[in-house]
Length: 335
Image (tube, rainbow, N blue to C red; front, top):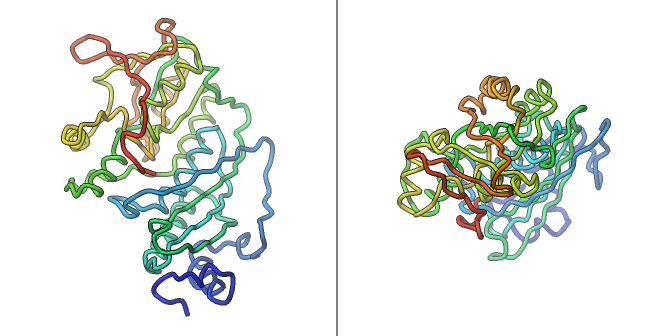
């Protein structure tokens, strides 16, 4: 019987490790591929394959609308989706601090299973390590994922051309605002919570209808500003966005005003930026709005021939200011 706290013995590979696996982890992730209990999983794939990996060290571990487990699954699913792939399988590596409450572990694992089910994927393999107290800040999670690339698509910044429209799937900065509120003890309305969500069904619908979408990107660390700057440089084009078109919740703007942040630089974990041929842009917006995670999608700007490698923001008063690449981590450990 597993105790109410994780101990070093749970990571030692013996009977207590087996109990943790059988009583806590397998019931949470359980699926036929994982239940083989082998060193790895044999999976079926077809055609071109996308592969990604990421690690999650967020603090606090639980925040408005989610926890580190939700972040781990959705983050990896979305990384695959942005490559033009349909996610299929992910792994989960857990590094758990000695003394971590088993009830919290169960909640995190249950959330991971819930997000995996929603995304239509299996967690098929993984690893668990327990480290001494003070060495892991509660729990760290590493995930890797593989998926089938949708045929006929070619997602690359080099496909971005002048005249293309820039589309954003919804309100920005919600995830970072939720983390900041939890970290600094700020009280926000219940409507403001992490936007963390699996976007794979939405991106599949977008690419199935418009396979010549040039680029998809999720604006995580560094926010929308970092993504736009990366694509401007990689495509050798300019990008001009409209300040009045940017969707920002008043409460998020309020957090930014209090703490001195710009929402353009705040992280998102359930948003998508798309670069789309102008004549297909409104159709893509309509497809995004048909999905619950894209209801607030809109065109926020366009690609230009001028100011190559730079991002400009057309302000509400008609001027244009340069949106620079962030120099470092404005908000530490948001994922």
